[in-house]
Amino acid sequence: MGRITLDKVTKSFGEVQVIPPLDLSIEEGEFVVFVGPSGCGKSTLLRLIAGLEDTTSGHIRIDGEDATDLPPAKRRLAMVFQSYALYPHMTVRKNIAFPMRMAKLDKAEQDRRVEEAARVLNLTDYLDRRPGQLSGGQRQRVAIGRAIVREPAAFLFDEPLSNLDAALRVGMRLEISELHERLKTTMIYVTHDQVEAMTMADKIVVLQAGEIEQVGSPLDLYRTPRNRFVAGFIGSPKMNFIEGNAAKQHGAETIGIRPEHIDITETGEWSGTVGVSEHLGSDTFFHVHDTGLADVMTVRASGEVGYKHGDRIHMTPRPDMLHRFDASGLRIA
Amino acid sequence: MARAVTPRRKMLNTAVAWIIGLLIFFPILWIVILSFKTEGDAIRTPLGVLTSGWTFDSYSVVQERSDYFHHFWNSVILSVGSTVLGLVIAVPSAWAMAFVPGKQTKNVLMWMLSTKMLPPVGVLMPIYLICQSLGLLDTRIALTLILMMINLPIIIWMLYTYFREIPGDILEAARMDGAALKEEVLFVLLPMAVPGIASTLLLNIILAWNEAFWTLNLTAANSAPLTAFIASYSSPEGLFYAKLSAASTMAIAPILIMGWFSQKQLVRGLTFGAVK
Image (cartoon, rainbow over the protein chains, first blue to last red):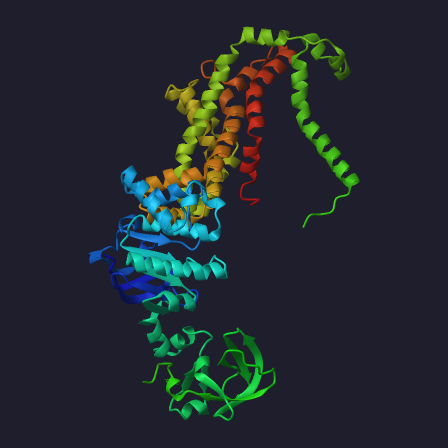
């Protein structure tokens, strides 16, 4: 249960086509993350799957059945919204039970599932409160609770963590991953945060302007980005891109090297002046100027390394970690 | 940021507010005072009025001459009936305009409001003739329908504003949770809009209660509400100030008391959307 296929799906708002014909298949039990900059169409794509928007053309199949014209209620999908979208006039218990009430499940079964969901999500003590009396993290867990009691074919998450503070976000990320391990239900997760994508996904779908740039496992995308866009989008801090002669030497229009694949050495191929340093304790990131290669290059050093603003350093890229791109931005194998 | 207000300034503001409040309230206060006077005392100079004796005579005469409760009951039926009927029609139309707006939605809203800008007397003749040929003159049903229709634009506008404040996400969540349109409206939209619906209800009951043009022109005895009850005391034989005042006091008291107890709702209703 939970196999979703998109077949030449398009979406236009008036004259503007936001999703050009798009094919995608999501396997049963997969954790798929749609990632891309804002306005890339990832939320629209999720809403098309949910049925909250109508497709302009193409077909959406859920477990082999054509769901293109089914209303959201009939698609057996559950969705968790960025704003949580809890029902403010209902208690937590009623919020979680709402989908079962709509499905006319018997009362005893409803109670059993609410108790079970509350136990899993640590909400047992809050069942009789209203959403307004809960913290952001708790509200998000209620929203997840409301989604799991339905035992849907797939879960849809629309940027569920972006309203939480940084510490809570890391915690909820783990909880959602844990939930996926336990339920083994298909999950589709939309985010603009590539760290969320990298840490949670079985499969990442990178989108730009409604088009799929690349589909693959997090490490596939990290190791072999299909083009410059994916290379720059996946990985933090961003990959350094070098054009001109240095790239020509490697037989490419552009070469890319990640900050963690450059070593600071006594002598080296490249040199530059240290600008801002970011000390994270475990790592130090140097922003290096005057390299003659790119405006600024980012270099990672492991642990605490004490170069000062204005120090001159030498850098050596790891040759097997160079990415080469042609004039159109595509990867050269 | 709060503005600094000196105590002197504050006292001045309070005094001005009280004066304006009293000025607005004064006519009502005067009516109440006159209602407790004899006809003779009621037409004396203001000072004479205040210094003369007090009596309940006007009230007993008014109750004897015209049946207060008959009119009161008509007012209740007309105002509550027209408002509830209006809400039944307004909820779906406000829902449609708030959540599935089309290109013409704004224009439709303006068009509905524009009907409130026409002088009602312009359509008095046709409506009178329609009522006459349908045999609906001086019936509660005709008046309920007419009051509903003249207040419908206001009801729709108010509900539209409240509905717009409800996040669309929540309705979409209900749809994802398996709610059909009917369930979405009944279990999610309406409970969330209860404060707004309550103030719409209150305001429209008041508007319908006080409506005088149609209620005076289309009723005789059977369906006459309290407005007609008051008007019957300004008769060609001359004005009877004390009795007129007693009738007015009896007519406005119920709505005034209702308004007093629901002022929080009313204020919230009228400023909804302006302050968040």
